[in-house]
Image (cartoon, rainbow, N blue to C red; front, top):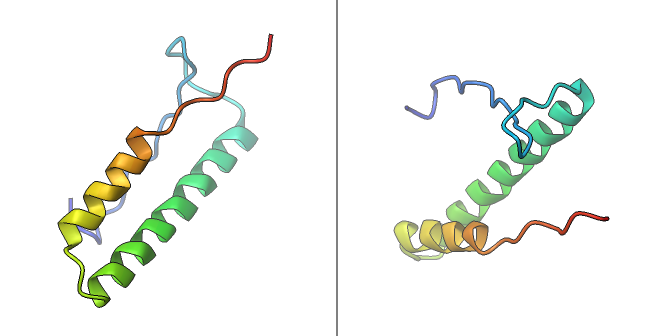
Length: 75
């Protein structure tokens, strides 16, 4: 998929696999992903402009995401 290819909309799912149906929740999730994408693209660009290896920066971003832990449910 190229940079100019339109992205398929994400179907956000609940832990049980059912799709999230609340339009406001979907809107917030999509906005969050767009903001994260912009931040990651900026970080990658900055790193490359400073002479860093793009693959290493991308790996660091992957590790950051993989290291996130979900919040505990309140109960």
